[in-house]
Image (cartoon, rainbow, N blue to C red; front, side):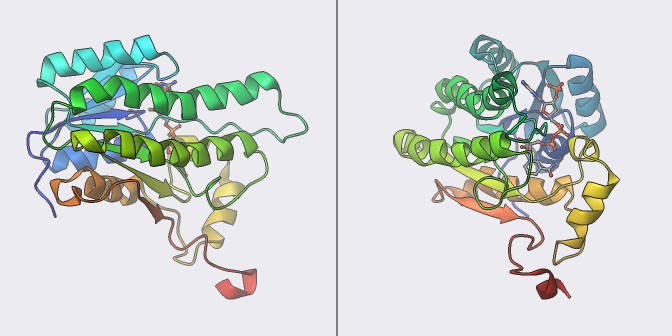
Length: 254
Ligand SMILES: NC(=O)c1ccc[n+]([C@@H]2O[C@H](COP(=O)([O-])OP(=O)(O)OC[C@H]3O[C@@H](n4cnc5c(N)ncnc54)[C@H](OP(=O)(O)O)[C@@H]3O)[C@@H](O)[C@H]2O)c1
């Protein structure tokens, strides 16, 4: 396991729950000083207290550039600067295309895609001063690779994050900042639990490794992209899905 995050200042948006909390925990255990950003400060602070290792919570809403700039200024004041941004905050409410309202579309795009832009834009002034600036996006298999009823807006944002990444990584390369993305399959989180037990059972049955993922499964992939050792890797993705995208038919899983 890499130790290169020792003393590094890390920000995880949406770190109070689920995948973000898993990323925050893995990076904190690797020696990083982790700031957890979420809209509910009490939940961000509770997650930080649970993780320990100098983690702390800061309030911030990725849909507002000013809010996230304030949050990052608070982190930089406390930690000296910011070396690693994990842009993870995201939502996945379901609505079929024929029923979807324009407001529902906007809510998902504003959080997942515009929110990624806000977090990256607000982090760049700090990452530029780091000798090892790293940006790790949480995308998904849904959108870039697969589709699922009810998630046309969500899938568009997750594919959009990868399009954003491929230009951002070129623009930021001159500062030595890398930009990469983790693409999770179905991971057991508070958000996923909200989709119900039937959804989780059906999904687990469609995974060759026969289980849903853990938040730490994603945390370890994020740790690699955040590490010093990944300094020559940029604009890349890693799918962490137990092989879920691979079977060409249900029989292939037998
Ligand atoms: N779970 C999966 O199977 C799965 C699969 C593929 C990709 N993903 C991606 O992984 C990420 C996290 O998903 P999850 O399942 O861990 O979700 P989750 O359990 O619902 O947690 C979402 C986190 O994001 C925060 N958040 C939501 N809106 C925010 C906003 N506007 N500003 C700041 N923070 C915000 C939440 O805190 P507050 O509510 O306090 O703000 C919470 O910390 C998302 O980007 C999602 O698309 C998840």
